Length: 249
Image 1: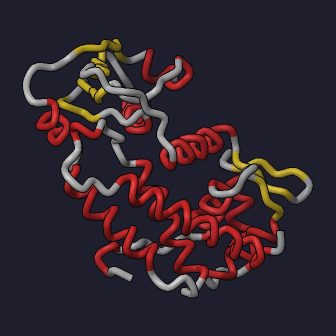
Image 2 (image 1 turned 60 degrees about the vertical axis):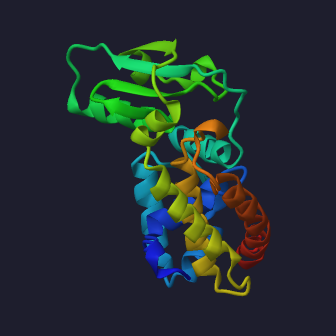
Image 3 (image 1 turned 135 degrees about the vertical axis):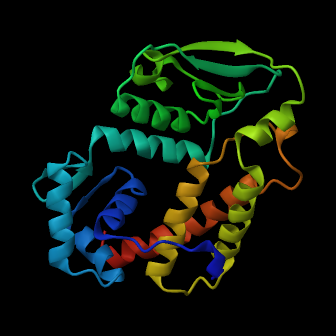
């Protein structure tokens, strides 16, 4: 595996979250989650402690020994699924523009706002001004109250080179380089250990969430986004079948 990926080790909490985020519906019995933890040498007691803490924190709901993602994390799963097959439309040159208009915002409000804007795939041009090409299919529910309460939303066509503007808003070269390294990792021997494949799978999904999903006209040549998605879908089908056999469901 490419050492430049610097894949971070998965904690018991992140193993549980990654497993449930990749499972439909996002609910599994404790015994299955313990079995996944075993792939990483995580003791049963450590996994069960993580489950208890996650229920207390509101990350999970527990009923009759089965653990399910909470509503907040179900929304994250929906974003993750959307990142695998983004909903786009033909781009006519317009951009979504969001300008912060709230006079006073607490630190938690600011943090929640930034997180929501990133989830909406908007880039920050400068403090309080966010934008992206208007090529994503949007519904009113896609914009949470934390966004509509803090900013005004517009549609417009900025002057100048739109590709240069996109390159200023996102590190496209950096995203593409990591995407290619991840795709290479997905190509490696399919008999590799399940834990290693699990770690790569989680890293790919995190990376796809950070894809700005720009119109083709604004992307550098040989953009690897769709290639990574295709490779991941084939990888995931095989990986999920192996994982289901391992955990006995």
